[in-house]
Image 1 (cartoon, chains in turn orange, cyan):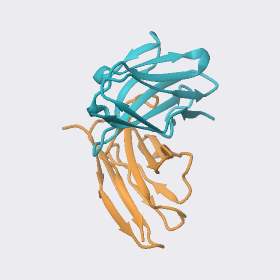
Image 2: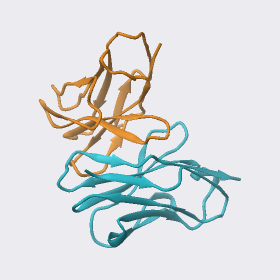
Image 3: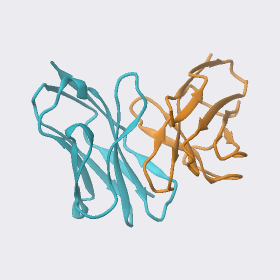
Image 4: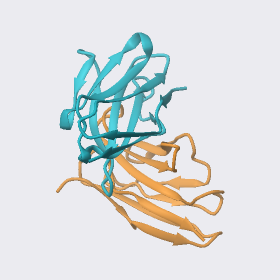
Length: 112
Length: 114
């Protein structure tokens, strides 16, 4: 079944720790994205990548980092510099940069 | 910069009522427009999209949306809602020259009472 797999689904972290969220897709899409979803605020773009070994900052990139070493993988690291990391994180991919997005099921990060 | 505004944060309807969810965007060029839906416990999925052509587009489950360029609007409609339409709905816009940056509205939670 083609799709996007995010892991872990739930994650707890202590303040000051970095954490990496995994995102894998088998749709053969070039473009991949990370969004953050907070209640009542919709989705906000963190980082996106249109091609392997290249990525761009989105609207709220501070405190986050990404890599794109393989077409199918786009991991997101939430660093200790992110001031308010507790949120629901969504990974997405698209065939074309202006096309529809296909989403994973999300990862909920809670910082204790 | 592009932005999206959804007018209703929470809508409550009875089954068989008609639905219209408002969406306005701002962007200084040509856009692609989308409505996504998130059913309880499921991932976000595409409801319908507009790229060009007929401004009235039809999506899954009887939903449709109309692009009115002069009003920068892309409102979502359904003539008769069902209990299974209970979900959160997001309007999104991608500027054609802003590839890779879809901007989402804050979402509208629709509750349909049986």
